[in-house]
Image 1: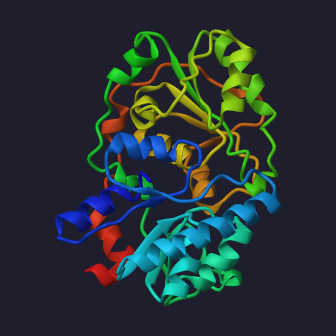
Image 2: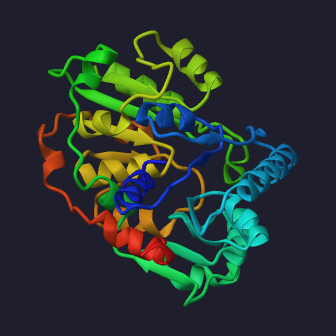
Length: 324
């Protein structure tokens, strides 16, 4: 959602009508509610297994087709959607699918073939996407990271620390749990995370756990009562910008930290994608294999200011050339 927000705002500023749909999963609907933009929630979460996912995907596709037939859409855009391309192919609507992790094979096998355009960061070699049917001119790349576009004008809001009861003068660590519902992780939880949390607490870090599910929140609270575990979505970008380190099993938050100058450790269990390979080679992301490798130390409070800033309008031109 965050990568699409500036693009939606630009479209609307240019006089286009932007209609949003969302799949209820993790904090997506909470983030949309916080934004305040109207949206339609379609479908349900199907669980981590293939059968449940297939049934949920079929239900969402049916709902999306019905929704699409009620409108007169000229083009469509999604980041990581498993449904939009199929619906648009059936409705004969030009569309772009975006992603920045190339090893979600089942998803990309269909989306890349059904999409009108496939937009990815230039870190991903074209050869890795050819097997999905994504080749130029359908395949288009953009410079840098998607986070450099949507964080262009971002400034952190320190009130997030007060809301969480975090003291700004003591080390702050943020831990993001794994998307255990993802097929490429087999529905499992990362075994490193418990050791990471114990290490951070023992080192005196105020540790905020951004969990994705109620089960993950309950497990974190049971591990140590000193952990700070929010019940709902928070201003995670501000939190990451103001934190002294991030340990994450996801992707986007790792990249946000790398862009905002916060030391970041990845405990991601899936095959390493090209974007993370590049960040690791540049020393902007560390691959954590043992909690003992964590370094809990303060960082300059304004490290987020010195970052690459890219124009979202450049990304919009590549994503939706039909709306230009």
